[in-house]
Length: 400
Image (cartoon, rainbow, N blue to C red; front, side):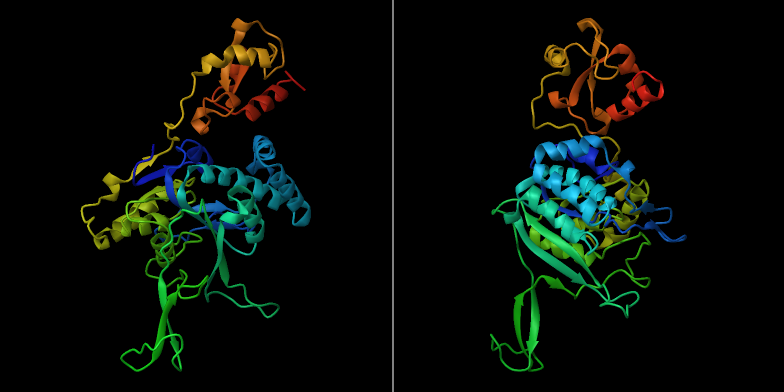
């Protein structure tokens, strides 16, 4: 495994996950954007001050290669995503594309004994469930958990929307699940003859799939940081306790203010967080420092010294890949001697091996990510993407 405990990546989670070894992670929790068509900003003076992100999806948020990859790997899902654009609007199709390409990687890096919880709301939960069914398999679906809460305004036109959805999928039948119990009181003996000190009848039963006992983060919450969309520690602790063992690795690819990371630390799990916002580094260390005095057995834990902050993808160690230069003859034959940029024919010696998806953005040395460019196109492309190269060549009139 090529991940170290207490690592925080400040980068696009797709690039990072593409660099993670297969079957490395025991539990994935993700609280991604919901396609809410809103922009979020932490309030001034809060610990998360400066944190901002948008949940508005346009064509700029996806790459054409993602659509091609989804079509190649799962034609039915590709068609569903296209249909979503007509049923809802184009932003939903774009959102599903961006999520699906990441879910493919989560499926790959999750252990066979692992589980994934996708946190969403009614805006996109039914669309995301189709993506999850397609990628993880409909038989892997375990629960649609409703986390209910009472906060904010009410509606006189409809039932107030006061719940989020957690889609719980297992990666195989060997997944871990240690369900907690809750105490239910009855007016008369029911299922059990148990009585508490006050003479009330009760039974201890497994927690159901409606969670209305966990309070949301509000302005007066002690753990509030001001980070938009912050979730309570109790919610993450329930998930982590139920679906992992001590020492297991928990990954949050949209870690934000690090609630999953803090919960994992408190429960003796290893963790890795990913977030594209630089503010995530400050708030993660702040929260871990605030919580460390309550961490059993980890009183010497120092967030400044012990949290590893990286901005580049890890190098995969689980596959043996030939050196890129070894693919040059096959690529020259495949492209018939034509540059994959300008489209001009060149002798073999004038062609250069290039990564379609740069290694700095998680691109691998595999043959499907390699191409041949002429020296001029290779210099123009630099460390950019293939799409950026084509755009430059069109702008300069090299190609139409």
